[in-house]
Image 1 (cartoon, rainbow, N blue to C red):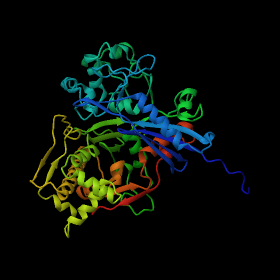
Image 2: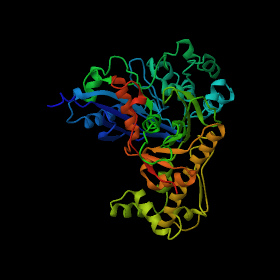
Image 3: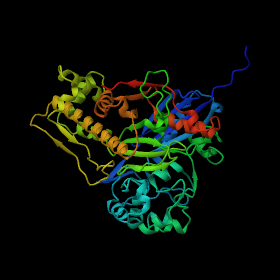
Image 4: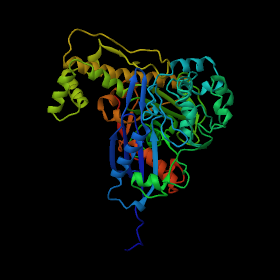
Length: 503
C-alpha cells in the first residue's frame, strides 16, 4: 500500500441507561455513530411517588445492547467503554447482591429512581437546616437528590436495607458533586451529614458513598474484568471510564460542538454563551461559566462536573416527555389518534404535528392556544421555583373532546414546557449568565414542534447536532478518553452541527 500501512480503525462503545430503556452505540474516532441498539427496562410504582427499578434487569439490558452493537466488529479494535445513567440510587450488600428499597422486602427492586418523591419529609428537614452546602444546589435541595433518599432508607428500612448496604469506593466526580453534595475543591462536609442524621458516613470515612473520586473519563482499575467482558461480549482489559449522569453526557456531546462554517450566530462566541438543553422524560438545562455563578432555584455551581475547568449550573424540569405523554394518553380522543397514526404509519406525535398544520389555517400554529393554557408542574417545580409541592393546571377547557382538542392541548403542553425553559434562562441571566444560543439533544429534540416552540418562545436560535444521539456520543467520548487515545474529553467532542432557525 502506497503511503505506508493504514492504521486499523479504533472504536468506542457508549452505553446510556435511561429512565425507560438502555441504549448503546458503537462510535468511531471521528465521533460518527456506526451502530445503535436499545432495550426496554422495567419500572415499578408500588405506591404514589415511589418509583423503583432493578439493577440486575438494567445490567442484563446493558449486555443485550452492547452485544448487538459490536456484532461483526473485530473486538481488538474496541478501545474504550463509557457509561452514563440517570442519577438513581442503587443499593447493594457487601457481596454486591441487591437489597430491597421497599416495604415489601422485594430485593429485586433495589433502585430508587431519580424521579421518586418518597422522601418529602426528609428533604424538608434537610432544607430547614440551611446548611452552607445548600447554596450549591440553588439554595434548596431537591427531593430527587440522594441525601433525602438515603435518610429515608435509614429511617424506614434500617434492618432490611440500611444496615446491610455497602458501597464502591471509586466514584465519579460528576454524580457526587451534582447529587451528593461533594465539593470538587473541599471534598465531603462532615458537618452536613452529622446535622441531617447521617453521621454514619463520617464514621466510616465515606466508604459507603465513595472516598476515591475520579473525574469523568478517567480509566477505572485494570479495565473490564473477565466476568463483565463475558457478559457484555467484549474483551477483558478494555478501558472503562468513570461515568457521567445521562444529561451531563448529552451536554458534553453538544456544548463543545465545532460550529464553524455553518453560518450560525454563535460562531465566534464563547462556549459560555451556549445552553445545552437535554430533553427526554425530563429536561436539564446546562450552562457553564469560568467563575462560579449562584442562581437561586438552579442547581450548582458545580466545578468540573461536566466540562473540566468550568463551573456548571443545571436548571431542570422534572417531567417534560413524561408530561406530554400523560396529557395526550389521558385524553378521550387518544384511541382515535392511535388508529389514525397507525393507518398513516406515523408516530402519534408526527400525526399530531401534521394535524396542527391542518387546523391552524392561515395563522401561526402558536395562536391555536390563545384560550388554552397549561401550568406544567405536575411533578413539582425543579427550577427555578424549586418547589416540589406545586401542582399542574389547565385553564380554558371546554366540553368538546375531539381530535382537534387533543392536538391543541398537546400544543399548549409543549408551549408550557418551552415557557418553563424561558423562565430558567431568565433566572440564569439575572444571576450573571449570558446565554445567546440553545443546543438541544435528547428524544424530544427529534420533534420539530418541540424545537420550534423553544425557538419562538425563548427568542433564541436553536442548534441541533447532525448526530441526534448526542448522549450516546458523550458516553463514547468517555471511553475514548479512558483508552488514552485522546488526552481529555475536550479533545473528543462533537464537531458537526446544524441550525434550526428561530422565527
